[in-house]
Length: 398
Image (cartoon, rainbow, N blue to C red; front, side, top):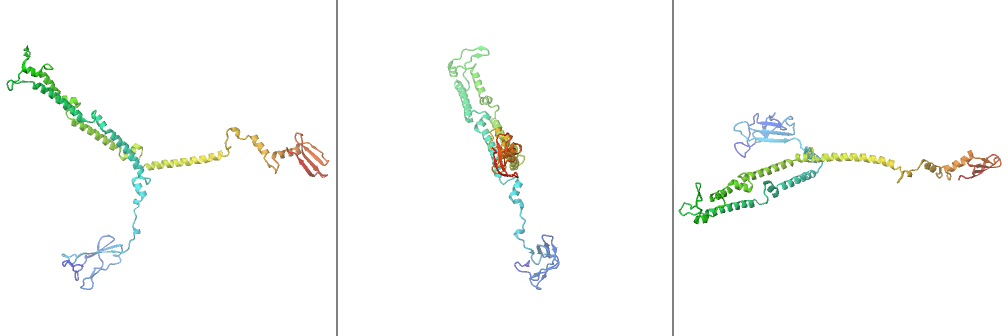
């Protein structure tokens, strides 16, 4: 133990009292050691710590030595004892970081997020294209009522109009004369209802004939045409503040952009394409499964149908290609070797019919003849002995 008062030196014969030594098992509460540590050897600088079996019954044992006196004789000591070794295999692996767990956490049925992101990107591209169209220079000009792309042109026209009107006014005022400083030379044509002599002289020549009722009327007209209201009317502004309309345009754009943002959220996109959840793969997988099931059913049905159609003629052009009952019977009667080698059923029936139903001649003569059913020919000519045994036979089954 380090000496508290002498830095860097071990404390000789440190004093240990109850409460100075405590133990914690596997992170549990600290408790006093059953056996108080002792200085070993006596009066030396070493301290022996003895732990009971109960105090060692854990995987992680922590011992703290702390002098309870004030000031302490010696510095605090902490010891950690690992009673068992842990291997890498003992660590619990997180199952939440597997590929399938990650897909389940984000709602993906398969390993390809690109497919869905591509669909979303395509939808966003379409919406952005619409936004670009609506916020093009031509669209904005149309929204604020500008025929061309340059507001400066129209403002310049307004300025030109004002300059023209001001020049007209100036042309009038430049014609005024002041023989006496501060006093306008005038030629009065009407004074209190009485007609005055016609205006003549230099002042009249400079002013010229008024275009209206009087020079004052011309000035009043010019002034009225250059009022704020007249200028706004000339450029198509309802109020005196162009900022109001520009702010309205900005507000309109903000509203449209807000609508677009709302329409391009994940839920809005899913609603637009008819998806209840974030996973298109689930529905596509269900559709694929349904199609596979139906195809399997169709294949089973087609196999059963084929088993039936395989019994039909290879290329039946008409029902006449299917043999009739008589045709089938004739084919059976004329089946080669149908009874024995070289003997068809029809030939056998002819020979049997002659023996059973035809006329017989030559009985007892040694040569017996059996006629066909119609008595048109000899079917069987048999050579027999005295016992009736056939020793030779001639057949005509044609």
